[in-house]
Image (tube, rainbow, N blue to C red; front, side, top):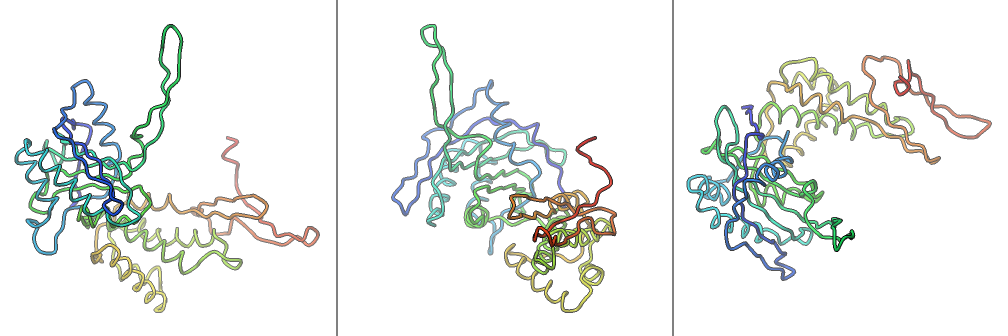
Length: 355
């Protein structure tokens, strides 16, 4: 179910703005009274800013326990795609839904931008899209201007394009399946509010999603099973995680039973992993397939994230990535009787930083 999407062909043409307050704190909802047409000389720059956060995100789609006809955002997107002139009305409905869902004390108020896009390139077609962005923080900017032959500095407050907290891109593709949706939440709070409560989306279980899910699951399971300690230094835990991901690197297809027998081996370890998988499936809100084609690109991403950090009371931090092709340990612990201190010995072939 892998889909090829290009964002560099798209153009942002019109937008609706809103301020989303917090209902429990008595903060109001305010929506712009008209659709703002983006001037042609600003379209390229704004389009790039709007779409930059959506690169390399896993695919999602709208979902509903009964029927998609009862899914509010799916209905709004469908109406806008069918009639672009309904953007203001439907954008107001989207803002109202977000406002109604913003009751939890941890949810922050913020600025909402709902953008109409044209000519997104997906699967060989040029289609329309809808971009929803929420910024929850205002940052100061410095400006230096000329005034009466001199220069002066001023501060203005605004939205930093690189720090937009939440976003959603709805592409007019898979119309009968809940549309092709990309989403992110950088706020650090519970992402269920944005992805589930407001958007109502589920991940598309393609090879990229499943590879990433099982790779993360394998690493987190090993880190839970072998937490760093005096007996198990952090680099050994990281190396064990690396070896688990070797299973993905060496095969074209994933089979859960094969993974359990080849990597976990012991019946009690397999049982604990099955319990761990059940918790992950509950968090994802969907069962994970046990047979799928492995996405090598996503295995590579998972491998790059594996590292160990050892923080010592002397102010020293040691960052270690698992060694590839090394059978002997590259770090060795010991105790110096004269200094009455522990030490770590590091083995290496050459100093890459000196080359």
